[in-house]
Image (cartoon, rainbow, N blue to C red; front, side):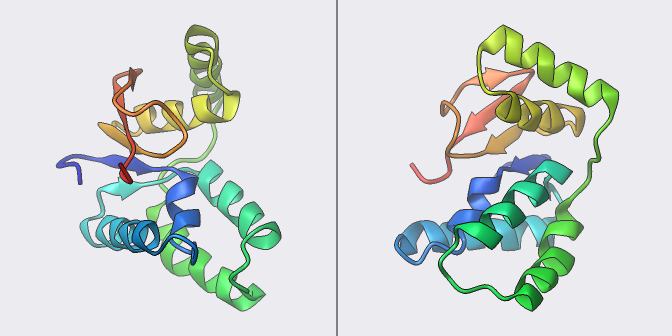
Length: 141
């Protein structure tokens, strides 16, 4: 894990519930525990929204409303350190235009940049790429 602040993308949380990939699930859970313990791993409002959307529609692990409410309170909110601003959206648009990546991925990068993260841990972007001063790292390879 990074020595400075780092950003966890939605897929880290989704993988932490993936019963079909036990090695990834264990790695993701370890990363989330470390983020909570060290208080250097962070997320944005977007990650909460995306995870809850996936958890309520696609995860097949049978999370109840109470499970999700508890996870929101004990894991997601303690890691969340950024709410939307006009400046954040402007930066995301600039990243989207300059790097030809999806707006939602651009918003993740903009959030990590705004929070002075050195790394984004994700499966969704090109491993090793640096955008807006933030390095993309796939923790599962």
